[in-house]
Length: 360
Image 1 (tube, rainbow, N blue to C red):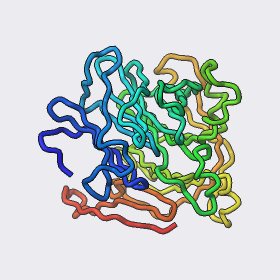
Image 2: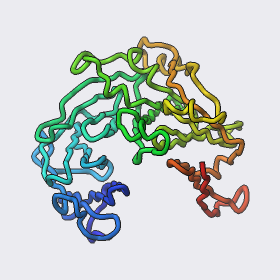
Image 3: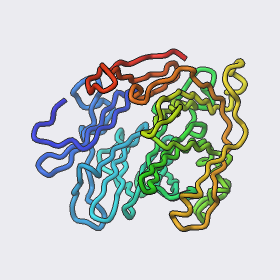
Image 4: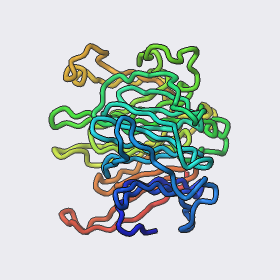
């Protein structure tokens, strides 16, 4: 799939819908093409071959920078996030019904990511989580609630599973109200980098209990019982599928960082304890993370620790991987996938890669 004399900005793929969305610039014009993954043709369910980009609000142009474009999708929705000068804008399409859109959000620049929660809700992830309804695509998203996070972030990313995990836990994971949201935030203090991985039950974003359009909801009112936070001081590796989370945790250390990784698989399904058949460790007790160094450096009065208690069942692998050997990890409903590298020698820059598949 080639685009002569063009610059690709971003690509989104949804194999479950045989969909690939390609954002690129040609002759100073932005194109958003909707294509089928199994061929070069237009997607048969698309309203047209491409989506049309509107001008940025308050600016009379459709300028877009290669480093500022981000495309995401879920079901019938496609969203493009872009920046220009001192603002960002999000445009959302129902790609199966129309190639144009009047559904916009905008704001001041800052660390931001977006996540769809099912087919009718959208989450803007920054220093706070802002929840919107996108049920009516003929107008801008309707604000529902704002959930405060415990500490500010320099960079934020969020992840949702692309596919629901089925089998015995289908009742929970096929419903967007019973899935997991993974948010990673990055803090830098001098030469130290700290990564916080938030595993959040999405039920909190559907059980608002009259909080719609109210004042921002403090972290202590919603976070601890609906979240489990993990802290990493080194390069992090995490992937989610359904209600399962796969993480790589460091083992041992040296002056240059950890020596090895071990894999931890965590099942946050409400049925996990019942169905575990004696496997794994049930974790119900709260976990505590010290953040006093962060609260001091940001000069605001907050709690000195994060306490979270979302329960899960954990299975820890007894196998260890060298840090430079384990490059990436993935999980789906049946298997774990490991991208491993083999170096010719300890000081060699030559290496080969292989994919290892583990049935679960």
